[in-house]
Length: 265
Ligand SMILES: [Ca+2]
Ligand SMILES: [Ca+2]
Ligand SMILES: [Ca+2]
Image 1 (cartoon, helix red, strand yellow):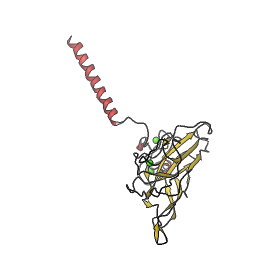
Image 2 (cartoon, rainbow, N blue to C red):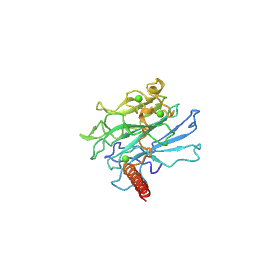
Image 3 (spheres, protein in one colour):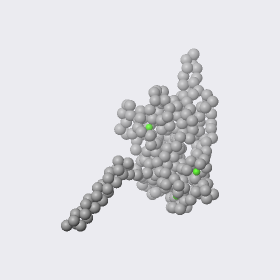
Image 4 (tube, rainbow, N blue to C red):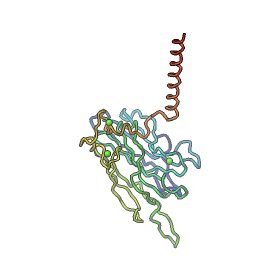
């Protein structure tokens, strides 16, 4: 997975007792071209980790070879590395139309100082077997993972553990999640429905295409008005694009001048 699956055994972390070995496995059981693929997702810490480095990320690997061969790991959280950034409690499931849904707890928008006790859930999805993914999408408000506190001998202690008591199942239109939150000052189980919505109309993009509100001429499950919408797709960075345009313009000017020179001769 590109690192160690660690135990977050620190009072400053979002979940004092966990989440060692929290690895999710999902398979595509459809008869599509992606059928038979196996996917793994885990929270992991870099092998080269040092104090002060980003403590943990969520990563993903895929197998098209029945588990005999695996892809290189891909980091699913796309925020910048930060010592304040905990991504943990991975959830992974595959829909019957081969979409992969991935969700995790994330502190990136919480406190920038210890304790890192404010988390929210983030979502991303893939339509091509995990080769490329949508942007990271926050799908819940922040909540305090150290709630409720408890009193022992008149001393207040934070909650030791909020999870990893989560579960997610996908259908063609989206994913259904059960997770623990603390919006009412105590640990409670919540239901969450997430779905791909690249055109931001509040309806699953699968429904948009089925109901013909959107076209999908290239049959990639993505409404054509969204383009490729992929959050981590390989794209030409702006400086390179600018450089290429500049070179093309220079080339055209040189060709034009040569043409003019030939005419003058
Ligand atoms: Ca991180
Ligand atoms: Ca939509
Ligand atoms: Ca499309």
